[in-house]
Image (cartoon, rainbow, N blue to C red; front, side, top):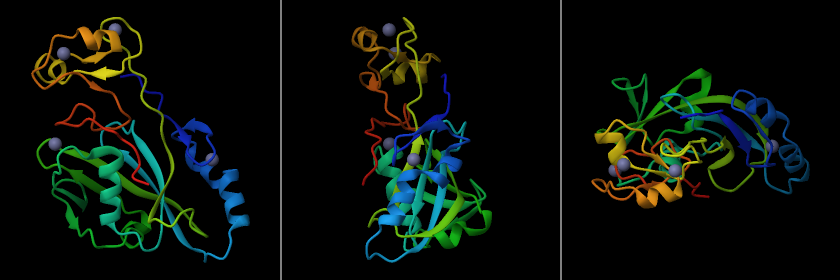
Length: 223
Ligand SMILES: [Zn+2]
Ligand SMILES: [Zn+2]
Ligand SMILES: [Zn+2]
Ligand SMILES: [Zn+2]
């Protein structure tokens, strides 16, 4: 799948590369205005995290977590925006599979300080691996009342239909699992597609769990 790894700042709409997004967020005008215009809310330490899929890193999120944010909050957020298909188990570890488990009751800021990379594993069968690390912090009034604020995420990968080279909107799981074929289809070819072993082709959404287990999206942030 072609992927330019570009993303969009959800605060101001600016688009840039994955590599340059941290630089943008450090000087995003929306953030500076928010700081200047903040009312009576108290400043606190806000830690910025880079969250990415554990494979090619084509799917990524930049979020800011508040002091009270627990790993349980991060787990819920990841399930909502990327992962949830049928309520599988999940866990956090340091050191990947076979590493040291880290309890979901721990605070994200305490665990992720000092350059620690955390691995999140969702579904211990058809697992989705996510890598999480801290990339910056600031003392400021939080952007929202909730424990996590989304700051930026990757643009949806550009995928072409395997039949006709138009942009793909659907994915066939039978093609992928049984026929070693990409299974990417435009709306028209999705309609005509004969496979239904794992159900009809599903709509492509902006999530690294596309095509895994029964995942169908919606890949939207929970708040
Ligand atoms: Zn911005
Ligand atoms: Zn599932
Ligand atoms: Zn198919
Ligand atoms: Zn097509």
